[in-house]
Amino acid sequence: MYSVITMSPKVEQDLQGVKVFGVHLELTPKKLESLVDYQSEWDEIHATWRGKSKAEVAAEAMMAAYQQFYQHIGINPKKYPPSVQNLIQRFFIKEELPRLPLIHPIVDAVNVAALQHLIPLGIFDAECVTGDIHLTITEGGEAFQGLGEAEPEALPEGLLVLSDEVKTLSRFCYRDSEVQKVTDSTHEVWLLGCQVPGVTEEQVIESLNAALSLLKRGYETHLITVD
Image (cartoon, rainbow, N blue to C red; front, side, top):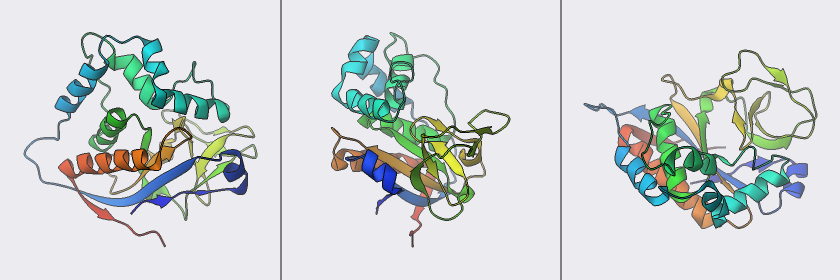
């Protein structure tokens, strides 16, 4: 069911042992009397990490694997921790679980699965995509409007990005773009999971399956076949 996202020859050469698995889905909201709630899952995640130090979180084997990946692609993991590590350190090690920055039920479901399995997952609006998606390295000058930014900026050379046939969709594993953010108008999504050295394909697939299961609480999901 999951496809492996294409990499440019340079990315494939530079990122040996890295694979990105994805699935293209159509989501149809179910008619529910109340909004889907993930509070019990947040509480369970909090119970796992409550009272731990940031150093203890960072030292976990899964966290360390993605830290090494960040270093390899030129991101300082101490300044910019991988997404799962960052969420745990910001919210889930505290004695009392603070108010979480809930984004959208689709994104929240994926964040729960990522935190449960310690695998960074991503989800974005697929209707913004022109043609195929792939991982590539910037040549310099590509326009990119980061999430929350008012205007696009020109990216420097040498960054790992997820792109379609005409535009940059994200700085991969680091920052999403305005163009592909999930909104209430989102009907199709790409769900992605990244395997790095030290993490097995089975672990990534298990986390993606968990995200799908959580999405199905609020949405009918239909697989869109990639030609």
